[in-house]
Image 1 (cartoon, rainbow over the protein chains, first blue to last red):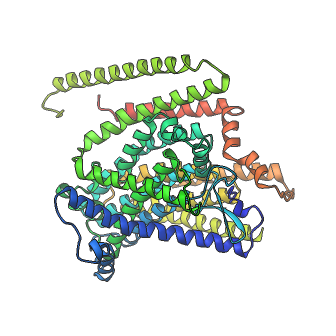
Image 2: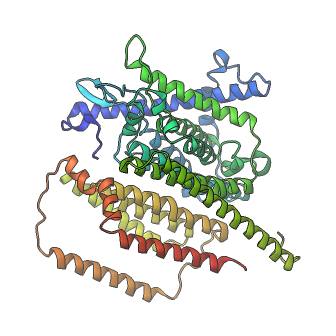
Length: 406
Length: 171
C-alpha cells in the first residue's frame, strides 16, 4: 500500500522485500518472546504479591517455565466436545491470535525521532522505519483489529456448545463492544493533537520538542490516557474486568472446552494482546521510543526507552491484577456507558475546541473556561436526567410490583 | 496491473461464493460468518482501489460492529448449536425481484456512464493518490461538499435508534 515508509520510496527490489520480510519475522518473534517473558513475569510477580514463591523449577528463577508449559500443551490430547460446531470450534483460536499479532505491526519499537533521522534507520543500503508497517490509516487499524478480536472469544464460546462458555463469550463480547467506544474516543483526542493517524507521525509529534511536556499524556491533559487505560483493561478482559473468565462463576469462560494447543492459542492471544495494548499506550501517550540519547551506539537507546516504558505498563497491569477485586457485571456496564463514554466525549469536544481556538487565535484563557463551563452544564443535565429516569423507574416498579422485579 | 487483476479475480470469486453459501446455509451463525467473508472481500477490493480509509471503515463498521451485533443477538436469542432451523420464509420471490432491480439499476448506471470507454491508465504518485483518496480528502469531502447528505443520514440513524428503543421498551 502507500505507506510513507521511505523503504518503498525508491521502488521495490529484492532487498526491499527481504527487509520487509525480516521486519515481519522479527516483529513476530518479539511478541512471542515477549509473551514467554510476560507469562513468567506475571506469575512471578503475582506470587510475590500473594506471598508465594511462584515458578522456580525450570531454568534460573523458573524462567523456562512457560517454555515447558508450551511443550506440554503441544503434546496434550486435543479434545473437541461432541456437541460442538467443528469448523467454528477450530477456527476461533486463530481468530483471536491473528488480530492480536497484527495490531503489533503498527507499533514503532525504535528509531531516533529528533534531528535529521526522523525515526528512520539505515539498514543494508535502505532507510526504513522500525515498525513492521506504517499504514496511512494508522490507529484506525488498531481499532479495526480490536473489534475483529471479538470474534475469537464470541465464536469460541458459541461453538463449544455448552452453557458456561456461552455465558463467558456473551460477557466478553458485551464488555468489548461497550468499551470500544470509549477506547476510540480517547484515541481521537490523541489524533486531534498529533494531527495524523499514522503511529509514526504520532510518535514524531511527541518527540519533536524533546521533553516530556510534548508527550500526548500531557498534551491531551491526562483524561484520555486514563480512559484509554481503563478501556484497554476491559478490552483485554484482564482483572479487575475479567468477569468473562471468572473462575468462580464460569469455570474458565469462553475457552472452558478447549484443551491442548487450541487452549494454548487463547492463552497466547491474551498475553499478546496485553503486550500489544501496553505498546500502543506507550506509542500513543508516552512518546513511544523517544527519550534522551546517552553514550554508546545511538540507535540502541530508543529501543531501550521503548522496552523500559513497555515494562512499566506490563508491571502496572500485573499490579492492578494483584490488588483490585473483580468488578460486578452491571458495575462494569455502568462504568463504561455512563462514565467513560460521556467523559471521553466531553473531553474530545474540549480538546477540539482548544485546537480550533489555537488555529483561530482565540483567547487561550477564555476558550478553556467556556469549555469547562459548558462541560459542567452538560454533566449536570446528564446526571439530572439519569436521576429522573431512575426515580421514574422506581415509581413504575412500585406500581406493578410483583409483576417485574426491580 | 496483472497482479491487481489476479487479486481482483480471487476476491470477486470468494465474495460471490461466500454470498451464495450465506443464503443457502442452514445455520444462522455460519450465515453470519459467510457474510463476514463477503464484507471482507469488499474491504480488500477497496484496498486494491487504493481507498484505504474506506477499507478500514468497512472493517470497523460492518465486520467489527454490525456482524458482531448480529452474532450477539443471535447468540442471546435462538442460535442453538446444530439447530438447523427453517431460515426460509415465503418472501423469496420478493427478494429475487429486489435483487434483480438493484442489479438492473447499478448495471444501467455503469453502462450509461462508462459505455465502451477505455479508462486511462493513471500513473499517479503516492502523494497525488493521497490527495484525492486519502483520509484527509475523504474527511474534507464529507464535511464540506457532502455535509448535508451526511447530516441527513446521521439524523436518519438517530431516528432509527430512537424507534428501536421505543419498540423495545416495555413501558
